[in-house]
Length: 305
Picture 1 (cartoon, helix red, strand yellow):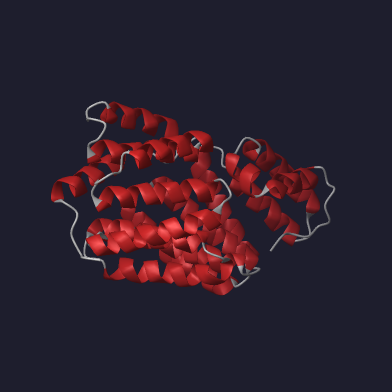
Picture 2 (cartoon, helix red, strand yellow):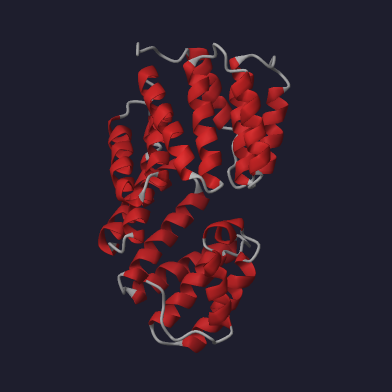
């Protein structure tokens, strides 16, 4: 495959388009993208790139049939589109499959996106593809892919590509946490914190603190874990935003101390805050059931690791 670069105009367009994202509000993001889409002829590369991001907003709202239909329409118009457009299409098709429970269909798409982006010398989207492989691959392969993505981000020359350091540190920490290897999990969550802070996103910084507290609890550092979560609780109360995952951790910390009665009110608050959250419903259906049992006093005084 012959190496070639993304055109400066198309690269600049992608950067400007990505700046319109608010991942916490995919509906609002879609409206902005559709306004932008109206400015471009349907066969232009820019229109195809915008459509990939519309598909992503649909996937984030778990409207997977709509996302796949949007991606089908893009695929039918790819023709001789620049490889950068194909990279963005492959990434979003892969994300749609992965989020809808078909990681095995997503894997080859992310691998193709990685290969094409590397051929283009497109650091940002190559790292995105490696990052997605680190999420989607079988558990035994995830760390290797995340480490490859991390190495790419560490040697990247573009400041935008270096922004991947924060999510990659987090993902490596999450993988260690899921494997029950809590000490390196905490180390990577701590590495992620300043990387998130450098991005200037207060919401992500709060989540980074939550991850540190989660690993502290897993390590049995209960006083530190409670201190971390209560500091977060104060922040969320200050901005008037309930955050059910903090309540959940405070319930689990109480259980880890053998105090089921102290866990009950926190579990009740967590359940109320999270019962409409799409993530636990789709990915961890037992999580809400556990919170309900704790809130009802029907669970032994033991915390999950």
